[in-house]
Structure formats: C-alpha cells, structure tokens
Picture 1 (cartoon, rainbow, N blue to C red):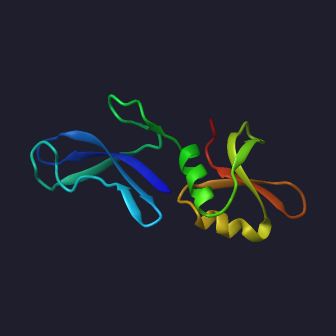
Picture 2: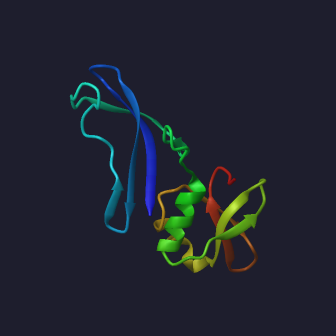
Picture 3: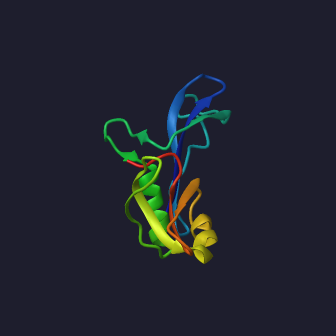
Length: 130
C-alpha cells in the first residue's frame, strides 16, 4: 500500500481542503478531487504535504509508520519494532546489504539505515518514528 496526503486549494474561490491519494496493489483507494468541491472549477493547487492528516470528525491519522508497515508487508518484508541510534523508535526491517535496493523500491518514503556489522542493515523511515 502507498498513501500520501496533502492540502489543496482552488485558485478561483480560495477554498482549501485535505486530499489524499492511496493505492493498494493496483487498486486506487483514495483519489484527490479533479474539481473544487465549492465552486466546481478545475483550477486546483497543491499547497502542502503532510504525513499526518486528520479526517475531520473521524480522527483518522495515517502516519509514516502506517505507510512503511503496509509497503514493507506488500513487498514481503517483516517490519518489527526497533530502537536505534539518533533516538529512533519505530518500525524497521532487517535485511542483508543485497536487499537494500529492494526495500528502497518498495516505498516512496525517504529511508535511512543502521549497519549491524558486516552484512546486515536495519532500514527505517527517515525523520523519526513514533
């Protein structure tokens, strides 16, 4: 699963709203509107990205950890809790160096990794965990 959320605005009426795009396999599960929900025109701008988006009234939050977990599972990796250097606490996958590119290709998230010795890497989302 890949999921990203962002803010959009209308150039004509100034309306702003949260939008999202999500895909599981080849199925689109969320798609931003093609026209303004207020005035119906198609002059839409993306104004901000945000990995923590709250749907009003439902309290739903999609975090980098959620995206990482889903992307890694979809690619056949088993994410586990990890407490690492630089105060990171969150999900990570442990792989040998030969699988690094497979993990990078499995997600659109920016990643970082710690070396566990000769051949093993712990890979996790950049910018912190929970």
